[in-house]
Amino acid sequence: MSALRLGAVLLTGFLLGCAIYGCSPVKSAKAASLKPDGQRNAAPDFALKDADGKTVRLSDYKGKVVLLDFWATYCGPCKIEIPWFMDFERKHKDQGFAVLGVDMDDEGWDAVKPFVADVGINYRIVVGNDSTADKFGGIEALPTTFLIDRSGKIADVHVGLTSKGEFENAIEQLLQAPAKGGGIMEGSARPAGGSGRVALPAELVGAR
Amino acid sequence: MWAQGNQYLTAEASQKLVAKRGTAAEAKIAVSVQPGFHVNSNKPSEEYLIPLKLTWTPGGALEPGEVVFPKPQLEKYEFSDKPLSVFTGDFDLVARFKVPAEASQGPGIMLGKLRYQACNSNSCFPPKTADVRLSYQVQ
Image 1 (cartoon, helix red, strand yellow):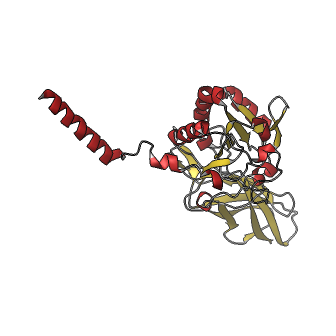
Image 2 (cartoon, rainbow over the protein chains, first blue to last red):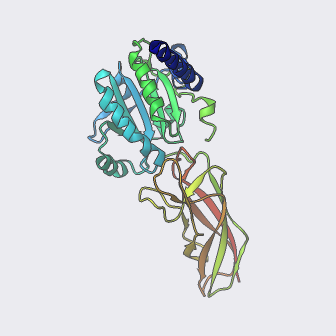
């Protein structure tokens, strides 16, 4: 009798949960944001200096999942996301994941170094320029964050403040996926499409 | 560093400034921020934010003085713990000038630059400058 009652309670809870949250094992909105493999463009390569003056190329990260964050010190929404990215770096760096921050302050390192030291950013930062922004579709809104798969292709783009869970979900999916060839990180000079720029989805550039 | 690209505000003198030599004068500059955006005030509430600032190109018959800003709004955004000191919508700046006694009589144009940094509710945009033209007549 008590087993029947327990069963009824569990079934009711399951049905109620389905009604509220849906019954799909993966939450649809987060899973759906990754582009299908066939629709991903290769990430444009760049060579920029880090705080130590070392040249950093995006192609150095071949084989890793990369969260590429365009940000600036005057950008409040960027400052919300940075601690999340530090968490991701800590949590996933041993799984072939890296965060790379591209700062877009006009003042360059004079603005960035104090901020990086103050916050204790644990991932690599480079200072970008117009050319870098242009390669990635003429970035203007900050933050703009690209998730790049192990093949060097752009799997996801977020313009503006995004939820931590959405990033986390996408990163985990990308880490689980096997690497496939064809990204610019394997030697091509231009992304698929040949323009040298990444086309941001129209709905993401509406504010620009 | 960034290309100027889109502007998120416009700024223009409300009317021609007519002033006599040896006096002080002031001009209203009408500023209009695009709906959905805000710009930091002239005295942002956080050190890292870039203030609104009007500067005039040297030259011309008028000597630039103080710029008077309206009272800013304190707005709370998702990305900030504390309310931010901002301007939104339409507002006026008052630009003050001195007209030297020896200033040349006649018409002229003062060229100014309004530097601002805009954000919306979830993104920020690089600092930009909007050109301001003020026509004047010295009598």
